[in-house]
Image (tube, rainbow over the protein chains, first blue to last red):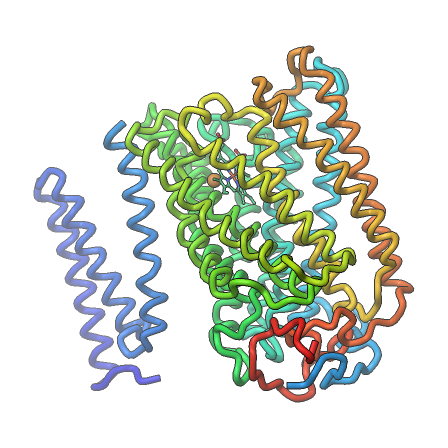
Length: 92
Length: 536
Ligand code: HEM
Ligand SMILES: [Cu+2]
């Protein structure tokens, strides 16, 4: 299977640095009071980091459509459990 | 394609069973041996769980808690439920029969990851050892582990949930293995639409196992964290929410009822055409309805929580979705019935069990919408009506499907035939015993007898005595069946490669199959349901 082009070592290091930077941002933002938005920002950063790991470290980038399908499919179920429980707890 | 009765592989005597010694089993990479180990283990726990059930029925002979007392009764139903669900019904068909027959039906030599396969068995074994270890302070929470009681109970909740965590992990490994196997190892010419329906149902099952099981694993970890470290996930005084536990638990446990039923439906879809000598009716409808059930099953978990104080909107949504999910199930029942129509039906033991599945599952399934309707649920929730409903689906459905599969594939797995007369006698006892035991529960349930108590109002005693009598007949039937299986294993007449004149690929291997299954990988040119044609 093709695993992207370019120098794998350079990409690896770049992704690693990006992950470190994003971690720093997470820590810094936690000191700013944004109300409910703190959670939103933290989750967005976390998702970005997870995507980087999946794309590069787990080689999703160069994978077939089938593997992409299996990787994205569980997100539907994650949103399901969130929507389902929120439909209860927020409207109780 | 070869016609029936001409196996491509001639038997070499003991096939995959030839090698002896415990090492040849403990470290085996043969999917058939892994399957056989799962079958022995799960049937063992089925019998142990059954003993607990008989103890429950014994206590219920009297309206007072006369024989064992309240606490022991609670322990018994917890152990009965947990063992039957986690150690028998979830793994029995997928990990047992599935392991054995998925590669054979695909025309493959093994599963995609044989090492992962034996690893899953040993993780399973670790799981049941931990479950047995939890008996030092036996659990009394019911198999549902509801908080707040499970967070506070002095029983070994943490140990038992760790055990179930391991069992879940083994279930994930198996599911993953099967998904990859079905994608990658189909014999040349076996397109998706030429796959036997058992494979479709196992594919759908595996998807649920992989997606839903992690949720229950995490839930039990949260529960353990709450018990051990005092983190307040579910405790309102610490900002938690006890109903959240129920959400998490049922997000797994409703889909898991389809992990139980889909494989049994797959077996029924194999057995019905063989013993009515007719092509299966509505192949695609059956195949796709398995997928629809697998996905739709994730939308209805809230129907277990209508009386737990969920928001009215959530109640309404979950009730509506529950009615939808019954549709693909009904589609299958119509297709099986249409397959039977004007077929040349014969009543060998596998067929008797498959027909029993259809009959009992209709009763179990149709009582589902009564429970799914909000108004009637308030009346019926936590009564014996629910107990009857899920025993008709799980025992009347899944277990009958499992028995159908055991009898159908017994000649292939062992190379020996069963005594048909004894098999039918056992079936008759099981059929009568089952209905006497559980139909009475619908009646006392509607009249308001609550579940999970050792004591009950004297006005329900007659029905309870009848039910206990039925359970004795049922137990006798199961003993006769087990005895027959053991006799068959020891001295049954030798089986030919294809005693039922069936067309799917497993019948082209020898009975029992050789370690590598087929001498030559079969090439598939048509679907496996061409019954009633000159060929079969
Ligand atoms: C036709 C589709 C089905 C529908 C609409 C349905 C509906 C329901 C509902 C609404 C409940 C909750 C009752 C209550 O506690 O108030 C329930 C309980 C249950 N159902 Fe079903 N069901 C269906 C099929 C199945 C199948 C196929 C199985 C298993 C093979 C199953 C197993 C169970 C179990 C184990 C419980 C009770 C769990 C407990 O509280 O201990 N059901 N069902
Ligand atoms: Cu359910």
